[in-house]
Image (cartoon, protein in one colour):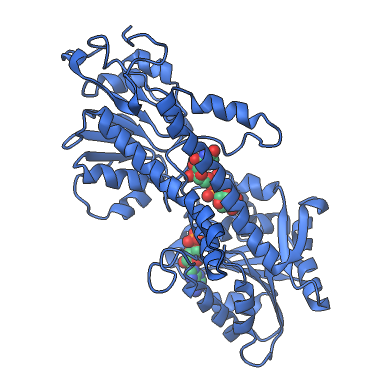
Length: 490
Ligand code: UDX
Ligand code: ADP
């Protein structure tokens, strides 16, 4: 094995190949993509994706044994092993629309591999794909009568955006699926596993059959997403009953059988994988007539949609049932912190619903503003503002939708000062110090616990000059008293 290629230089292909190139200086790694802008950017110090720690990794290998190219045919031709890491979004048309994976990019690559290969190769499925896709790929690749031998492997990617470099460096496990029934299949599996074994402990490199590998990826993401939906469902209950979902998550997560990760309540999960993978699973189950199983997993996605809508509904109620014409500063648009990725970001749904209520929306984000602009095109009543302080100036509400660390250190007193009163703060990620913000004068609305508000009971709060004592908050089904039982005024 001398040369490996990766088709698709995105969030998965780019970082994964950078790590392999850094760890295996004797291998030549070619990363090919049809998107010339993307390829150009990989050659600069402004990489096409924002990912902490990625630039030093790329610089370590770029030009030495890591090369980015638009010449897909040449990369295929030279490679002994080819990763396929192209996008597989959910279908938006025809049969399986809204559920099944759109395999058009992936099939195109399979045909290109066939067209540009003149010797045996290993082809590795890296994108998330429905179970049994490898089988379909094998059929395409062997469609010219088996002139060339292709061994098809499944090697699902478990890296999470924002921690991709750490996850690649020190993965919980690496999964390599192949045809373990044949000598050639086993050899191919070992060839790929040996690449990872250069830096991953042997016991963490698991080998299995292709279908189990494909299904494991879908199931891992479905389980993670299901935990998020489970805790989010409890957040709704906590808000109406007076419990604090954070306390519940802490108590529940300390049970070692359950564990504490992925129990942070928020506005709902986003990202390119969770929803897509669950819907793939649902589609698969429906195809096999497993209606109950399909319904079970579909409810995880339904709950996620509910959580986003519920958030906006709660905002509306808190702000006296109208946000028309009000300036709302949305802080954070990426689907999670430490990435510029906005695919399936819950912020998109929230912003759309705010616009539908005729709010004046100002979006700020340290890394995702370009992607946010692309999402909205030339939609009216929306602005983009890199500086959170500028976004907040003159706003009725701050809405935190991504838990960027830098947001913890904002000068909230100054933000409060520049806002219309009463000033509202909605923490869609439950990551800010609510009590401190309340004492600054904000009416604070967390997820999964009682709001801290100056509005309902006791007359004007700090900085307010209107007859707010007449306003009844009514949000979250409670009286609007501060959660410490006081009337909330200092
Ligand atoms: C996920 C999987 O974690 C990864 O293994 C797979 O390869 C790709 O899909 P990613 O989408 O990058 O990774 O992000 P992840 O950290 O899993 O978060 C997904 C979403 O869930 C984010 O929107 C995040 O904010 C949300 N989330 C996560 C919560 O709302 N609460 C939590 O406790 C954890
Ligand atoms: P992921 O998160 O799975 O990495 P991305 O959308 O970030 O998904 O990356 C997929 C990449 O695959 C894109 O940069 C896209 O241009 C590329 N791509 C899609 N089809 C082809 C193709 N036929 N040949 C080469 N690259 C392709």
